[in-house]
Image 1 (spheres, one colour):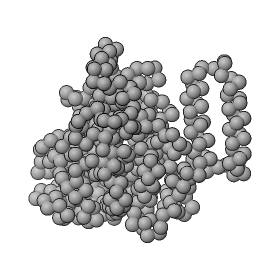
Image 2 (cartoon, helix red, strand yellow):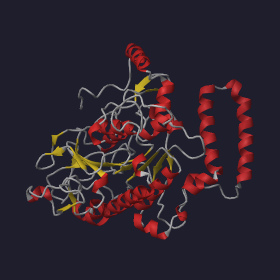
Image 3 (cartoon, one colour):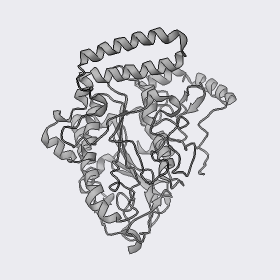
Image 4 (spheres, helix red, strand yellow):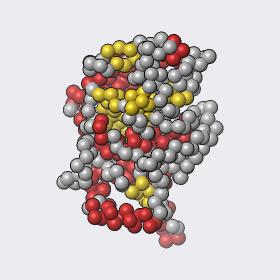
Length: 463
């Protein structure tokens, strides 16, 4: 199990909590300060570190399955045939930075990108490493594809932001689309770390499920039951509230409080014209929809852009898993990358960067493009690449990130970091840093036990 000096336990013993609470009090970081800093309402940030609080929102593009670093953002043209693959590097609009030829449009946006080439950890399992990259903590069971989500999981970064920046309208504060990350060959099925975890179900994401490129697509959770008008729905809500009021005296208030929160959220979503408008891709021009790509990923990224325009703090777009077309390329790696995977990824991220730049939102919107691990340098007998967590690549842009840079470096075969090794914990810490959450922030679970929200250190050099 990977343990370096910064990867601390997420649970704080009571003695340590008291010591930390005292330190936080001296530093002026009590709970109101933490919440106001995270919501962007504090008059001054609790730290002078670079980039702190520059981002108001975040779009996380989670490349489920693990993209090949050599065939995307860390090409190795001088490596042997058995490693480099068929794709050539191309120049970008930043001298000295090269990407794979599979990203021609994104190459013209490199001045907005921080290319991370030294991400690394030691867990080759999809599910458990997915938890780590989505939460900034090791999962309850590491090195495992057997463990489904549970209340022991660390909350997804979107769940934490939902806690710190609760929505004051019907708009959800954390949205995931088009499906939760699920691996059909993994015994555990769904990756942990995608929900509220120990924060509770009320901080689970709002799921915009399905293919928004399909004709007539609507968010299933926003669809009223046939024959149900908004007025009739409101009547049913009032009746339910009356019944709940009568049973309060005999049931535990804690459970009812959580249930009330979920019910209010559901009714607010179903009856809000603003929410329906935010999810309505029909309000976009055909030309805009074409720019993002008429495919499930492109339309999800476009929808993510619409949601941040409606002030959703965090939107996670998981790469869709249709059973064969995701980034887990053990076989036929090169054809799948060339024909199915890289073109929609290239097109969608390029359109997103262009639109956010044009509207002036890029500087306050953090974009992160990353998978749970990379792929092995040596090509296997099925012309594929196997799992490789020891070194891989990702992208960051916007939200105070300094574009036109490469952070870290890999060795000659992109097998191990050669400079500035960066853990998933550090990447998540950097996201929280950009979003204005102090590095030593602590939240409590349903039993009032304190937890650190991540176990990393922010990469200040990318700001």
